[in-house]
Image (cartoon, rainbow, N blue to C red; front, side):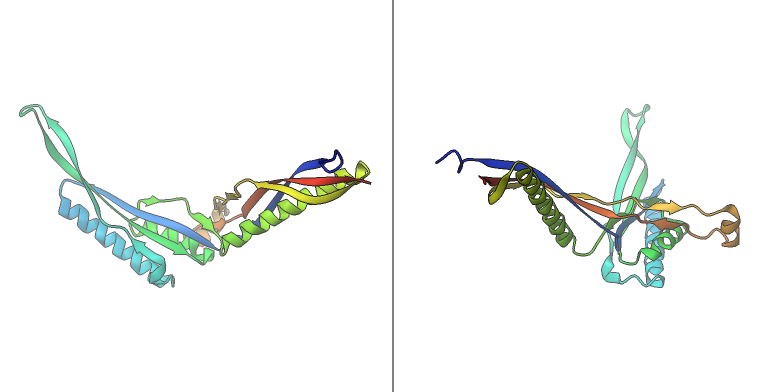
Length: 219
């Protein structure tokens, strides 16, 4: 292979795609401690039923709602008189997992769920439809950025860009935002009668990086 044929240039390229989220995964849990297992279980079941009725009122399809199995864990204490463990109570927990496809309902859902008895609310995991397409778009932008960088170097140095020899890419980074409550004035909150907070979802960012090696032809 001649010296001219062996000449190459290796460049990096970056690409980013930002999209607005259009759905959220929300986990609403109720956890009850009680001396009596049945009373704790009954309270948990009643709260879960209230949350399911709430999702119906908000128009959330049942196919987008899932309830986990009841989790019952006994709690123990040490009895010094008998030198043995004894059950002191029970922790009963159940979670309602909701795939919410209307973010306008997010604040209302979380607010009314806590009013219904939910005492653990996960931070909503925001997502977007067809995320695979957005990842590919980020990769395409990164590849185009690498090509432009290589062309700039070749042109500046009086050479011509040749064929692609090698391409490597890193995993596309998916950066979902954490929805932030939008603060309202005290007067507005009072007028709304303690209404639910609204949320600013932000944007989901898909970031990609590639490294490309091109043949370099000297003019």
